[in-house]
Length: 333
Image 1 (cartoon, rainbow, N blue to C red):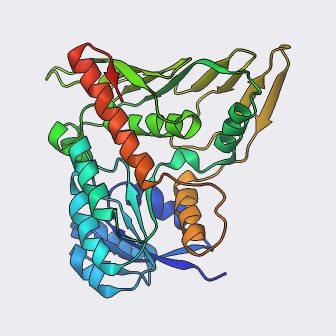
Image 2: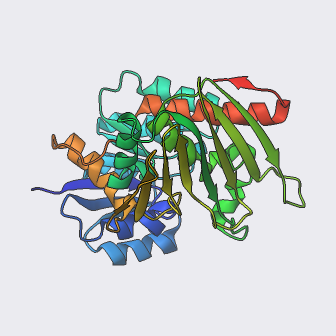
């Protein structure tokens, strides 16, 4: 197997923290080029990666051609610009979530890519694990009956002294509230499991002296059931669970809504019998890139990633949740 070469735009944020360590030692992907504006961090990456080329200008990396596919790892307000530039390379792309900081930007990116003709995926790591595939199978096979209700939560305490807090707390750059941040993963995984909701309701609240809305609770309404979702940038990550209840059973994955892979899932059926499933630890940030590499190399990926259409739908649901919260009304998706 020949490893595919990956070029990373914006390598000093989530890529430095998660993706680069995850791909260390990968047999499927080798990081061949990285770009970042922070020269000090770029030099540290150079020492870490050895032979990889480093660039301070995005265009210099694009012009180098020393990659088989690209990872746009920059914040969402830069996605349209960087994707537009990257399209000139004619290479497949992975883009950090969400597709854009608001619905208008996401639709603009989708319009750019409409006739691109190369594979494109948005990086939502939760899909790239066997546990989540098994949960989808349980639902599809009706092993908990028909869905009746559910709960998904992703809370975390945002470090306001960090560099990325500057844009995350600016709605024009980072999007509206926590569903545009880590909460985007909740929306994506529920779209993966259940498809598009018919409508949403939501409430936003603030634990911030500046009055910024940093907590949100929503309801994704389907024809015969609803799923509650909660995201916060101010609460501890205790209780970041996925809990699904049906007419004949339930699926529980405690602690599953996080950066780490799911280690245990419990399926309880109508007779009260509980089936416990255990999973080995997987670095999901490496798995999502390797799955995409398998796909573009013509190999069957272990798990399918988030498509452009699904990423657009995810931003549409996030936008609907924000509008529902600010208007106090149910919003159709």
